Image (cartoon, rainbow, N blue to C red; front, top):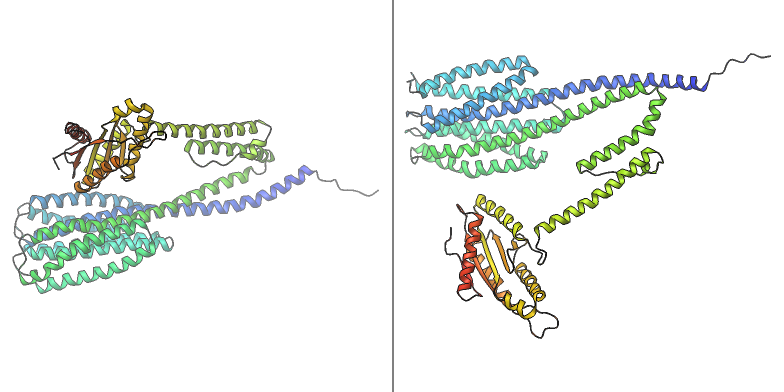
Length: 576
């Protein structure tokens, strides 16, 4: 009789297969987990470097303004004005805060780079002390020498901060989009530094009683040419980045600098060279420089936002990958247990689907159907059926809510806004036109022969007359204009953005149309004419006026129209 080896049981066979599979799976998951840890650390470094760049670029913004205004002060022989002093102090305080924040972050990224920047910053602070002595009334041995020292050393420090940002960008390079955006950020800073230098040199030169020197003239022209060249590159890069906010901020820079500030600066170059600068030209140029130069830093901020958003995306992806790798590693360890796998398939997965559905319901997000779960005959199936019933109930509730919201603001007869909703809408329009300095007109309309219509034809016909009136008003109004019912036969019409002459034509057109289009009722031999009186309150800016003022003025004008014999239009005489 032949010997037969003992057959392995199916359980042992499956266990061995599962163990071998798990060994391979765990090795793979371990490698993925290790890579995920590395990528996550790198992503956190990228994000930290981007945040540090934001702090340092904000510091550049404030220091450039301090640099320019201080340079102009040192170029003159007059004591510093309170306005310039407050301007410099404010910018300086902000710069110090941003530098402190940037250095704190830079310490965690690159201690050596932070120490180098701190050393340059301390030297810059020492130079500030010299300037402060002169600002406080002290006399410098050589004020012009101090001005040159301030100009050169502060510009050097600004470039030191910019170079630090550039080095951070090299650390955190992450694909073409990230690099292009970071380069755009650096170019925007360089552009700001160049126009700031040219503006500072030029403003300081024309603030002196002597004409521009040849050196000042050529230096100003050279800086402007460099800025223009850089601007052309920035425009090309903005198109490639195709970011709406960057494009919008770039357009603001072009307007505030190239269309407002630059023409004034260029218009003063020749008079400055000839020593014929008009009085107050330097002050005007400095006033124009603040919004123009700030706009450039708004562009830098927009580039920072794109960079931060990209870094945040990289960080989120790395964190998600790390979480996924960790989860997969845990699941790999649990894979050997067929019981866990069974419950995962039969219980956990459908329950998770139901829970996600409930979360999506509470968050108002799109909900996927629970068709497979609802078909089951066990507790999971009953739970899924309950969720589907909840979905149906919520949909009906939303429908009823929308219907109730509509009814709460609508006049049931005419379909226009009711009195409460009209008043709320009028307050909103008044607030908006007040902020934007736009025209606002409010008209009160009343049917003169309403009692006659009700007494003669009945209230049902009277209701039709009110509907007909609202339809006639709507035909001569814009969709954005307010039409509301304030009382039985009294209506309010609010129109914004039209001049007094346009409003008068509109009201007269409505008044004429009401008279020219009587109410036609089937069964009545003759149409029923409608006559209305109108009172109009108009404001070209409504400063100091309230929504109640418009209503009361329009109501008073309506009363006057009634006193004149009805079927008339009265405008409030006061035009703000």
